[in-house]
Image (cartoon, rainbow over all chains, first blue to last red; front, side):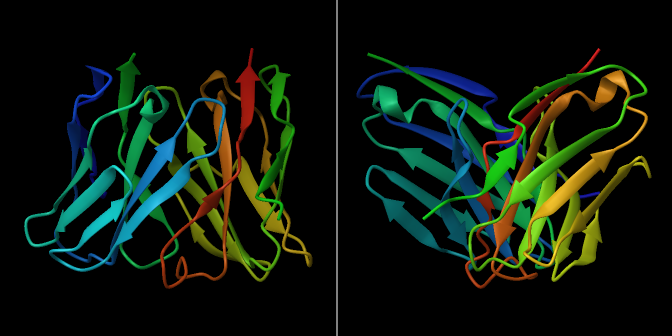
Length: 111
Length: 116
């Protein structure tokens, strides 16, 4: 059974704060690591798909890094805004037909 | 372009009943996957279909079944509903089985099932 862990479980920050979350995953049979952003009552939206050790990806104020050898990925949000409030999910992909998701980190950004 | 569409959005059933959930993938996508998300947990894989064939099955009882139609739409069926089946059921589509070269799944907004 694959184990994907995310921390923290939830986070409450003020507008303008920078924040980061952690995703840990198995270091064997690695194919890709996915980050999704999920707003309430909407569909999960892909942020990044990361495949190579040392990968760094950036989309606006959000960036992510990947360490496949030690089995972790960090997601960073610089200067959080209220519209960043969402649940951030990571998912491990071993190259077959399924994604194994963590429980997510729920972010609330207050004005 | 239309994204992944699911129906119904919400439904309430009683224990022992049967439910059918429907999903239409993004045009051109041939693979459909189903995930169950229980409150406080991440989405858990149920099934994947590609070209009308089952290509993966998660750790769910035989009460859960699915199928994919020639137009690539899909149905998830759950028989003999239990209280524990109450969850958000997410459908996701992708171009092919190996979650495509980008590995990205495109999700619908889900069907919220409540079992009383």
